[in-house]
Amino acid sequence: MTSAIAHSIIGTNQAAENDNFTLTIPEKIAANKIQSIYIPNDNNVDHLVDNLDEALAAADKHYLSLHRAAVPKDLLARAKDSTLLRYTLEDWALIFLFWTGMSYSPAWMYPLWALLIGGRIHSFGVILHDATHKSIHAKSWQLRLVEIFAGYTMASTLNAMRYHHIRHHRDSGMPNDPYFKPTVQSSRWIFMLIWARHLLLMPLWIVRGYYGSLAYFFPTMRNSYARVFLQEKSGEDLTQQKELIDCAKAEFGQAFFHTLIFIFTYFNPEMALFYYFIPGTVAGLLGGHRVLVEHNYLPTMDRNIETIIKTTVDHNLDAWGRLFWAPRNIGYHIVHHIHPQVALENLPKLRRWYIENHPELYPLPYNNAL
Image 1 (cartoon, rainbow, N blue to C red):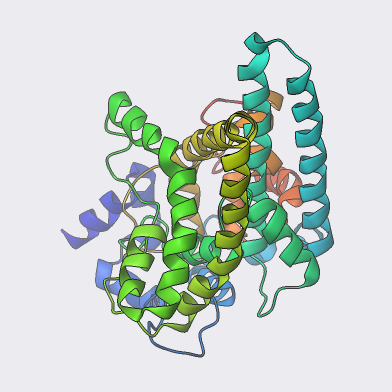
Image 2: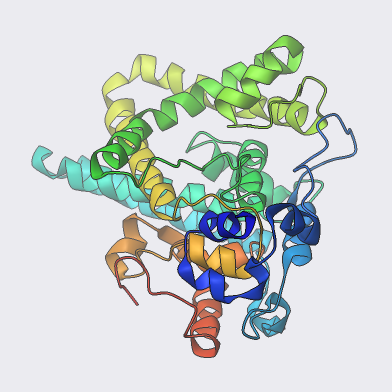
């Protein structure tokens, strides 16, 4: 019975053919050395990037000769701070171009401009996301500019995104996965309802800047800050967790940024609404859709490469999809989960390597876009 449960956990009949899935759940946990995602009150824990890579390496197993270590090293280059800053400046140049077009266009064209600007704000989120996968203990001046001009614009700090996103990668499909929503694929209406909630994503994250800033000074607010705004699911007391305190401290900059935005809004409400807040809401919808379609929502108990392939989805790889729904190659999501620290610009070549070397395992994207 325990073997059958282990098979159903990843939701595929093919798993039964693999000896890796004949283990009982306790045996799988022991074999993969699954540990707590973090030590809640350990002041030496700066972030989880290295811990994530170690967890994937510990779970790495041969599956029909498939192994993370077999990938050519030249396909595994990591993100550079200067490249992330360049991406940020490129998107800002496009936003200024779209703002100019909006200013001289008839009103009926506004939805197009809002979508175009929202797509670039969505791209800011993907750029900041790539920065979260860097193994750093201090932000370079380039990363600080990325955080200000990409992160604050879409209402997130680097620390906040790293807090929930690395946990998603390390415990994807597990109880502590912040993004795991088991009901999202139960019906189209449930999907639409959960997606619609992302209309409030940017407003909620703006509020997080102020709430987190207060939580830095008032420890009694820290647990609610973590669970409401950072999607923390461990249930532990996080009052003295250094990583969380660092997140709260980082919110000072975002709170200041949006205070300036609100002052501007007071004097120019119409301009702020149409040039920033509506496109930001569109970005929340685009990003929410992306997050919802990136995975098959099947409970998992391991981090094996075959489980990653079966529970992760490539999507929106065509030109239209990459412009709005999955910018900066984030739609190449399977290889992103197999190799989280690989730079976004390297994901297409990395996916091609997996398809050429393991075509029997690597699935087509859900929209069949190659």
